[in-house]
Structure formats: structure tokens, C-alpha cells
Amino acid sequence: MKKIILIIVLALMPSASFAQEAYNPEGLWLTENQRSAIRVEKCDKGLCGRIAWIIDGGMQTDDKNPVEELRGQPICGLEILNGFTQAADDPNEWEGGHIYKADDGDIYNAEIKVLSADEMNVRGYVGISLFGKSQTWKRVSDKDYPKCKAAK
Image (cartoon, rainbow, N blue to C red; front, side):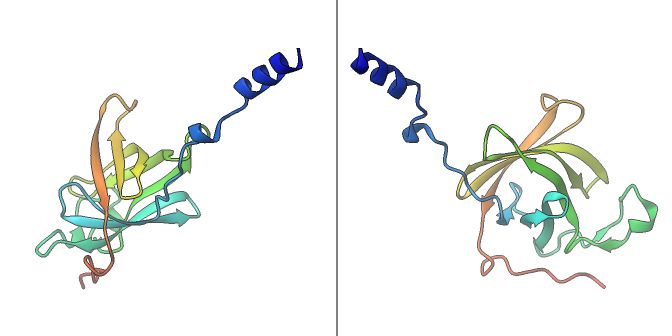
């Protein structure tokens, strides 16, 4: 009887082999179109991200911001991700955030899924996640993507 109880207890215990590895979302990430790199880090509003590198000839000012007073601000250093909180059931999912698409001045609901140490999926959407678009961002090094300088 003790053996049966022991087998049942062991079968019901969570196994370390099933534990999911948590990847760190903080760092520098190259966007899918390779036109910018985003510095992702924890901030007062959860997980946030700012433009840290821009391709030569890339957009320099935020001319389409929906807030008129913010139009014309430099793209370099612009916060485009904010408000993400870590999902309770998956340490690699971040939800409830927003992404700003400076190309058209739109703000979308967003979620992040860190796929591996060097890859993450960023999904922006309207309403529900089903109606959205995803990008896969790659982790890059600061030496390969030096910090941009804000346009004057």
C-alpha cells in the first residue's frame, strides 16, 4: 500500500523536466525589417522599449504622433513599447502592453512572447490578438548596433 501511495504522490508532483525555462526579455532587439533596434527593459510601466538604433537614412522625427504636442520629437530614444506585465502562467509571455507604430502614428494593443534567448515574437493588434500582426525580433549586440543620436 505504501508503494502505491508513493507512486501516486510522485506521479502528481510537478517534474523539473517539465519546468519551462524563463528567457530574459531585457536587451537590444533588432526589428524584423532590420530598420531599427529596440532597447527593452523593465520600467515603472512594466516592460518598456525605446528606439536605440536606426538604420542610416531612417525616420528621424515622430511627425505622425496622435498627440500634436509630441509631433517632431526625435525617433531616437522614443518609447514604442510600454505597459507589459509578465503572464502568470508563462514566464516568457508579456501581455497587456502597447506598441506605437511611428510610421503611421498608431498605437496598438500588444503582447510579447520570448521564444528563446535570442528571439522574441512581438504582436500588435486591435481588439483581440486574432486581428493583428506579428514580427520576430532578434537579439543583437550593442557593438554591432551603436546607440543612435537624437536629431536636432
